[in-house]
Length: 489
Image (cartoon, rainbow, N blue to C red):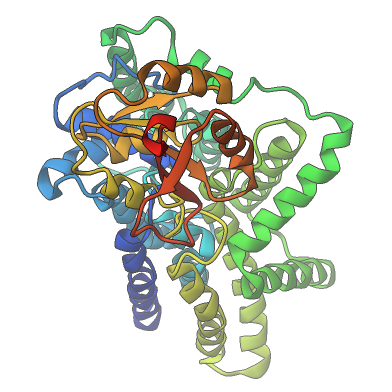
């Protein structure tokens, strides 16, 4: 990598940091983020360090990493986002290094860095409490370690331990890491791994696996987290025939939003250009590139044909690999133009134009404008509602049906008791016994027609809902004080 390419990579890192920094403080918690952050707080304050009282369906490494930052910064939401923020910045040069080691040149490395730095998907997931940014980082680090030539030192196989350790950390972050095992094993075979290298890597993998098994054994839980996670997503089955077309449309929409229109067009043009170039000039991709192409295609096909949720977070671990393939293809095309134009700065001009084209979507992602990853309005107003109840006396009751995970975090140290009700009749039965006794009672309802049946049933029972002052009128939820029939009279 020459001096210009090193400068280009540095600029990508600075652009990536600028695009991510705002969301660290501006975003609010998605319900899943609120749940994960509440687990981290239970660990941080040593109230439940093994999470034995919680129905944890994920490996625990992200929660323990998040817990490290709560004592340092206090009970603020952005403390749980710091691990994702850090690894999202490191992912930019890491992807560039992977692109270089997997057959690319300096141009391909810079292109891959530009894509990861400025794509909406990577920007909006960089400031979240999800475990997927950490999973992506560990997997890319493991891929880089596998693709590194073995050291000529007296212990040449010692470098094979690192990929195993990194993959073990990925597994301790999310079980989806297992899907990437064929890719890592294939890369090991391509880069000349033999016998003892695999053994050393397996020993390194035992580090992460041992942490996970010891944690599970130490918890007083009745069932394994794999079974619980399987149950929570409704099991896994082959998609029905009538689901294939809607799932394909959802997947295509997610990719379009994740890339943004300029990058979508660039991906499509590069794929078309490589197809034409390979036919005319007999371009022969490297074995590592063919393996990447096979894995990316298989991953997308698997998530389409199997009835797993079509979620944006499932695209994130695949995204750097897609960026590497795109970067390699664009680098080949740029090399052709550079030869024909005989202009040494042709690639620099093209990379500058690509970066400028991605700036508008990066700015939109910086403000959380895309319906993926982290957003300022993700909590629907839960944080604001919790602030209104901050000074409520002990015994205050908040009735809830939709937002329990939010309250698990937002009312973590509050004196408010959250009472979940399954349907309106159960709420009326509870109010008939306890309303009017002790502190006031509140209810959080969606600011939409979804809440109409609850409001109607409470009105039929003689209860009046009084919205609290100082609420955001644009929020997706509204906090009400429940006024009893006796108080109305």
